[in-house]
Length: 310
Image 1 (cartoon, rainbow, N blue to C red):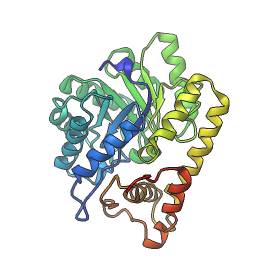
Image 2 (cartoon, rainbow, N blue to C red):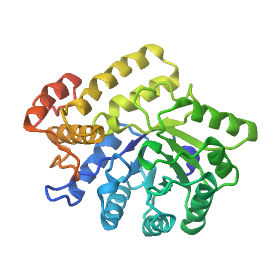
Image 3 (tube, one colour):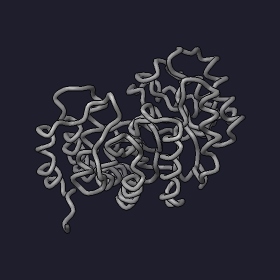
Image 4 (cartoon, rainbow, N blue to C red):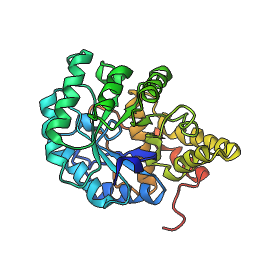
C-alpha cells in the first residue's frame, strides 16, 4: 500500500497481556478486528500505547507479526522499532521488515540525549539498513530529545523519511514543519498524536491523527475525523463531545502515573466489552483497582459501546 494512501485515524494499538505478562495474541487479534471494523484507517503497532518499553525484543516482534498477519493488508500497518541506540533499532527493523508492514517508525535514541546532527545520522542509518519507509516518532516527553522541524524537513527532502508522528504536544513545531515542507515542495505525511484536534487535523496541516482512544471507540474517533475532513461542523462538534465523554475512561485511576491510567482504563473497558481477555498492564505500571473499575460498565453503556448480544 503506497504511503500516499495513509490518511485519517491510525490507532496506536494496545498490547494485551496474560496475567503473567506474556503477549495475549488471541486478544490482540480480536482487538485488530474490532478497530478495523470500527473504521480506523491504519494501525501503529508496538508503540507507546502498546507498552513497547515493557516488552522483550521477542515480544515486540510477536506483536508486530500478529498485527500484520491479522490485518492482512486491509489497512496500513506502521511498526515502531524505537530503541536506546541506532544498532538496536536496526536489528528490530530487520526482524520485522518481511512481515508485510507498510513502514517503520523510530524515536530518537533514548537515555543519552542526542544532538540534531546525531539524529540525522540515526535516521539515515536506519533507512539505509532496513530499507523500508521510515517515520520520525517525535515524542520528547518520553525520550528527552526533540527532533527539530528543520531536521525532519531535511530528512524528508532527501527521502530518508516519509512521515512524522508528532506527539510533542506543541503546535508551533508542526506549523514550522508545514511551512518548511510547503516552501521546499517536500511531500511528507504528518500525523498528530492528539485527542482534542481530531476534527481539526486538516486545519493544522496534518494528514491524520494517532489517538489511543481509538482502541476503545474506533467508530467515534474515525467518524469525528471524517466529519472534520468533510467540513461538517455540526457533526464534528457532536463527535467531539462523544470523544470527551469517552476520554473519562482513561482518567479513572486515583493513583499511579498518567500513562498507566490511560492504558489500564482502556484495557479494563475492552475487557468488559469482551474484546480482551485480561486487563493486565506491564509492571511497574499500576492497574485499576476493582473500585476504580466499577463505573466502567455504566460509562460504556452510556456511550453505546457494550455488545447488544451475549
